Amino acid sequence: MKNTTWIPLLAAAMIMACFGENAQAGYLGAGSYNCCPTEACASCGDYSAAKQCSNTCYKTVIDTVWEKQNYTCQKTVYDTICEKVPVQYTKNVYKTCYRDECYTVCKPVYKTCYRDVCYKVCRPVYKTCYRTVTCKRRRPVYNTCYRDVCYSVCKPVYNTCYRDVCYTVRRPICETHYRDVCCTIYKTKYKTCYRDVCRTVCKPVHTWHNVEVCCGEWKTTTEHCPGPVVEKCICEPGTWEYDCSSCCPIYKPGCCKKVKVQCPGTTICRRIWCPKTVTRKVCCTTYQREVKHERVPYTVCERVPCTITKKVPYTCVRYECETRTKRVPYTTCKMVRECRTRKVPYTTCCWKEECVTKQVPYTTCTMVSECRTRKVPYTTCSYEQKTCTRKVPYTTCQQVCCTRYVTRTKCVPRTVCVTKTRCVPRQVCRKVPVCCPAPKTCTAPAPKTCVSN
Image 1: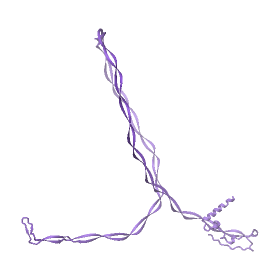
Image 2: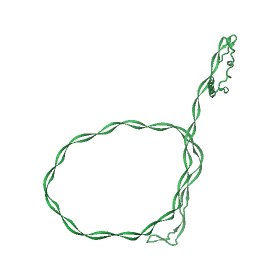
Image 3: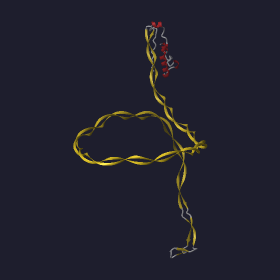
Image 4: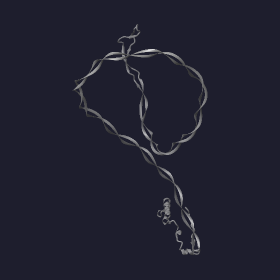
């Protein structure tokens, strides 16, 4: 507890060192005692003398009071702005190419040949011979006869009749009804919000300069050009005759002479460029970057559920019973007996003997030896060289210039007004009771007037 008493004193000393204007650095920001009057610092006597005094007087003491005062100052604040800067870099692009490469392979060629091989076989030769055999045999001889037989037959006679039958039919009747169905739909709700965006604006600054410009004007001048000199034939009067057939003058030879005559001239207008130098004021525009803060609106979209009621159609089917009549055919059958006659065959048999001669075949076998020739296959192998082409891959590297955008931060200073609080000292006078000696020997000090700051 004893060690913590100095903490408030140290804090007060630091506050007075930061904000006090009349503080002394030698006293850690606290006021010194040099400004106190001598009477206030003088000793009031010893304890025994003070004990004997009987009069009480008041002494004026000047105290320093610290008051809080608000003041405004400007502070530089740095805003961090992110901007995208294009950066050029080189990237290696690898590409796989193929080149043709020739190589030689030995390919085996198999060939099947045949050779003749003779061998002997015993071939059986079968021969069919016949011998004559005579024998007796009894052959049955069948004879077919007919007799008349009477029999009765029941013949059915069919007759189609009709009867009325009543039946009930259920006829469907469809009816459309509506019912209310509550369903939830989502409506899109848009809301406009604002965010602070810093952007750099190039502000034009106009400067006027005097520039000498070479210019001129076109002037129109008039010039007279003389006409060309032309030779003309001039005939004297009486030197031609008229042709009565053509009524045209015919000049006599040797009576005309050639004279050079100048044709009338022409006037030409020509434009001439007259240069001159003129001093003109030219506006030179430069751009200065300026950071502006503006509120940029952006739209926020949210889906809000909404309950609506809609009518949903449904179909009800009910059946109505209806009685109908239809004619149903039915067939009646009546058996009628009828007598018929038919011929019934019967067979009679009698045996007859006869001599039969027949050739009976028999087979004889004889083994015959014969030579045969067969083709026996065999395979021959030969190698032939063949040139083949294959694609061999190889990689090429090419440097390509690319651009990427890097986000860089930049600090932009701006001035902000900040309100701070400081402690200002003010002197306050107060009266303190003090023991004074007897009025015979002690004289009271003159009262002192205090001026508060």
